[in-house]
Length: 532
Figure 1: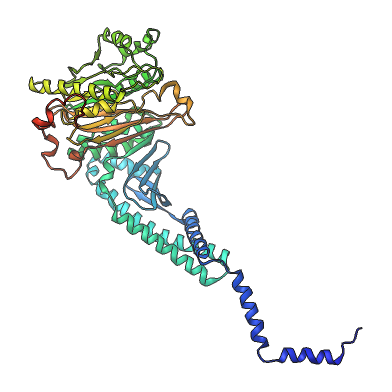
Figure 2: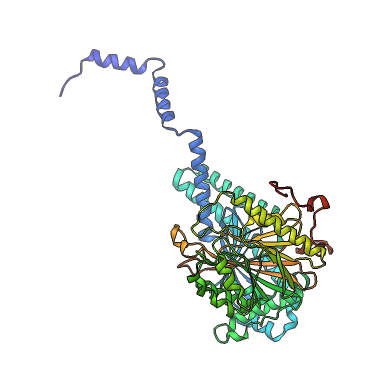
């Protein structure tokens, strides 16, 4: 063993016992500890991540409640979401979605099964249907209250458990649980503040439920005859129990005699599957007239004309305007068909109680080329259509619906007609223009044709059912229909109501006269200028 000299031991002892030595050691330890602490912003971001992830896990594990709603047994759950809203899953039929609120949480309602006893009681005692709405409202209220309590416990437990696992400090874990509860309360308050009960009038249907609009009737009867509507809905619900035994027991569709149904299609682009889809929609919705706003072809050659032959057997009159992929050869071929009404240069025709007028696209670009002055030619074609509309009104035969292929031409008739239909851009769009004319642009009913394979994702197949009042000939509602594109098997129908037809609108708002410009605005525009 090596001996340490006594002098050295004495020196070490003096250093350790010198005044201030422990303080210096503690200062060095504190400096090292502070050097290891993360930046405050990183600490805050980490805490937020723990709170959100823990709350979400808590909702997944223990955030659902089972609630009987009317004749159904349901499971209610809150889920994180950027857009909010409510989703009702009716397996295996599909789902309904409502824009019920705007908040970072979505309410999911899964219909697990129908209670046979309660469903049979409604069938045996139809007088109970009148109170079904109040019963369902009470059940949903009780379920929402129970869901709020359970969700609060779930998010606090989840965030606290994850905080304890990450930080290993009880105080930090409890802080995470408290923040999770505050986040849930803030989300609930936002949902309550933005709650929109009228969203049930404009649902989006998917799966087999996409046929629901035709089963329960049109939007006008939903607003004005809600008693009939709720009975039809109840019949639909109760008959689900018999779906697999006898589908014929589902409620029959009784067309409203005061409603004219128009099927709007566009941009088929030589997709042969479109004809079967159109024929199915004509039969399902009892369509009175089909409107095609152009680009039925791809190159407009005579060799393509045979593609148009199925138009004869669609089961409804066909109103057509030329698109930029359709040629005059195409137009002349369609003009020879008995049930086809070709509109060009403002020609007007009355079909199924509605008066239509339209114009063909002035451009022919089958190779997708761009010709100089294309925008000017579209505006000129639209201005000529607007002039024809004014002539029709002066003659006492006002037009109800105008048709053009390109939206830039359709915009020129603003103020001359209540509704103008267009296509060309391959996606659906609706707007009310400056002078009161509603512009409805249809998507591609052919899923953009063969060009759908050019992109990363296939384009959807889109069409619309437009509902018109037979007396006023004004648009009451429309169903936007979207089917999955090439290789996809999805279906969605969303119902839309003009503002004048929504609950709370004035009684006279839906019966206004056709929009019209002032004499100064109706005058033909000087050459080279554009009318607003």
